[in-house]
Length: 75
Image 1 (cartoon, rainbow, N blue to C red):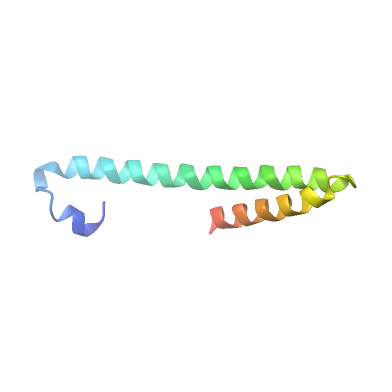
Image 2: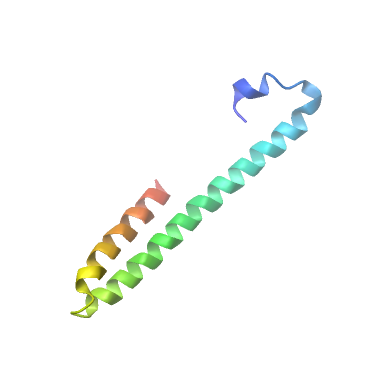
């Protein structure tokens, strides 16, 4: 929780606030990791589809979307 939210908690409940902070951090990291993995998978599928002439119209945009997902997950 942010510092402004913590100010509303009595000092006796700080372990609960710390647990919520830890849970939030873990979910944010898991979400970023999932986005990066989805981006990498989309890039691989896009590259494989681009290798075929028929799949190129779908593969190039898929690769670009995967690249954008991976970059967004990292930064």
